[in-house]
Image 1 (cartoon, one colour):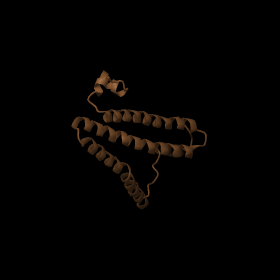
Image 2 (cartoon, helix red, strand yellow; image 1 turned 120 degrees about the vertical axis):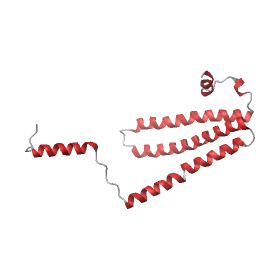
Image 3 (tube, helix red, strand yellow; image 1 turned 90 degrees about the horizontal axis):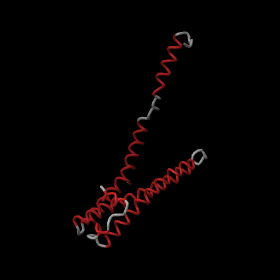
Image 4 (cartoon, one colour; image 1 turned 180 degrees about the vertical axis):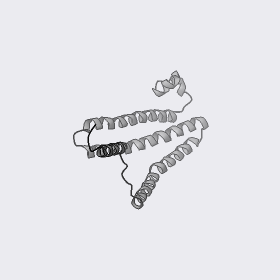
Length: 158
């Protein structure tokens, strides 16, 4: 457990990196830096929300949060591809790291770009052919039942 915490905090003993070449160490350190940057970006949306709330800046908040989310998705994609590439490179050597990183990058691109657009288009087409009725509030039935009881009792309140 101690070794895992050391790696997460970037304080792993140097002997853990003795088997890595300089490129692998550079990739590892870059991935750690990207993880820190992603955390900071995600937390900044929370700070912005707390700063913008009740100041009639909803559209600005939405626009800035959308931009930060897009940047964060790109960075998370780099972290995922870089991590799998580094692990495959260390374990299998050769081109396995590059193939694994390229493969996961392709999967992420498909999942994050065309798939949501296709699903949104299908959902919108379905909504046009079958308009969605507003979902009744769970208390609305209880409220109307209470009103009916009172109306049946001459409208008198208990």
